[in-house]
Amino acid sequence: MTSLRAVLRACSAAALVLAAACADSTSARVQPAPDAPAPQRLVCTARVASRTVSCAAPGAEGVRADRILGQGAGMKLTSSNIGVVADSFAFDMTVTNQLEYPAGTTDGVSPDPSGIRVFFVDGIHTTSGTGSVTVANADGTGTFTASGQPYFAYVGVLAPAATTAPKRWKLRFDPGVATFSFGLYVSTPVPPGAGSVWMTVLAPAASAVVGDDVDVRVRVDSASASVLSVRANVDDRSVLLTPVSAGVVGGTLSLAGLPAGPVQLRVHAVTVRADTGTVLRALTKDAPPVVTVLYPTGGVV
Image 1: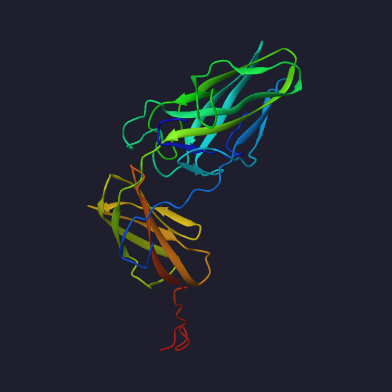
Image 2 (image 1 turned 180 degrees about the horizontal axis):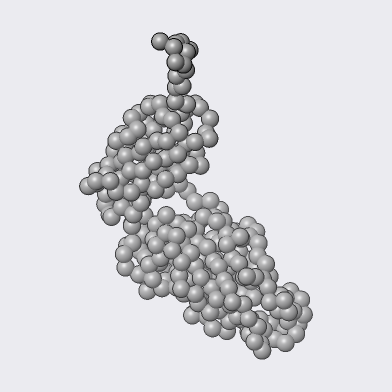
């Protein structure tokens, strides 16, 4: 079992491409992140002759970790440049951080020496043909969900939406192997997320009636670490707020196309140490009034 405050981040099935509250408060403390969903193990089947891999994410049980994120919510794996040379099945693999805070670090600033580790859950299994397949160039073996699990490490602080440099993975297979499968998880250190952030929504006002475009202004009053991002959203509409003056961020949120009626504005802040939270504000969306002049008619006074 890793000694880090390790976080196992399950990979999205669609991510691995081997073939190619404070309701209506104006000032609120950041709330802790909700419990993470159940994990998903990424299971991949490789075909030597066609040099392809297809992947699915069945349910996984028994994973030991402090916190677990589910399918599509954490780290994304993408590979390219697949090649089969002699007895080696090789490809380049990258990791993309889909979290809202940095990964590969415990303080949000300095890289953890262990790095982000992508590990094989229970080895590699031949599914057709004869012979075995092994990991040829793993960076090491560790105990994550069991002992002796080979892994590839990506060392460095990985910012949200950032992608690592590619690393070449090599799997060695016996001549009789036609297809094989393997399962993957991602284990990464992350910041503790135990601090606080206070912010005030300056605009729109509580219970305001808004149109298609909403001017959002938020003042960050205090934070236990450097604020990484502040985002405002209503339903599926979202805007990243950017600095407009000292301590104030803002932006325009488009509600065009949403029906008239009550809506809820959600403002969410994240620091480099993964301190997160939300301020909610009730609003009403309504179409702007339309004035029609009935009399006098055009040109008549």
